[in-house]
Length: 265
Image 1 (cartoon, rainbow, N blue to C red):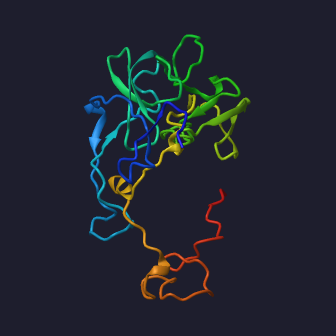
Image 2 (image 1 turned 60 degrees about the horizontal axis):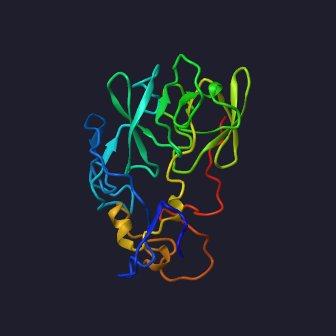
Image 3 (image 1 turned 180 degrees about the vertical axis):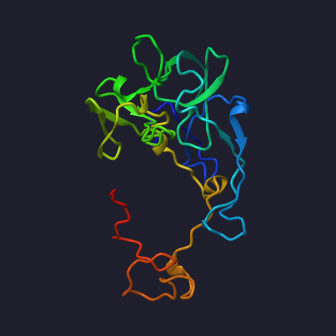
């Protein structure tokens, strides 16, 4: 099946792994901003004593962290110009490089239908709101899609940062703004919290097909063995016994039908 979308690339079936492989076409590769990037050490799921604390991690390709300016601290009062759109291996959405009048380059999470100029949260002039503008929720038009939403004044935005996910601003009052999350849950936040107008790019990422197990190994995902295939002393499901046991984790806790969400007090 061929996807009629310009962002999806498929391959001729010259090998078994390429037969079903479909990827998103990547932006043109650029030299990263070295002042806004740092090497990420691969710990392979081990802690400082060498013990495995997270299973199925290890062996991924080397990555560099990109410092994303979520709050537009590099250009809060000015318009910034778009330089390029780049791929970030640490997130599903693309990132965009902008240049501020303060002669600084910085990264943001790139939205769909990106604008050539974006405004900071304290831009003093009235301007038509475009995708990529970071503003207080009170300054965003009702009904707009937004992402990178703050939940605390002292922290970076945490809501709706993955590719294709966007919240909808429903209404504002004297104190709060009402938002519908991608999960359809409705929450109230302080209307002075920052959010970015638009929807994160790469919304077609769910159409990609890796094509082979090695593609997961490049990303640092190691194989997962079923508990049923283990010996009895390795897992509660081991020993090839059938029936009579509820689904359990490796450590004996119930794995299904248990509520794990913490209710706010």
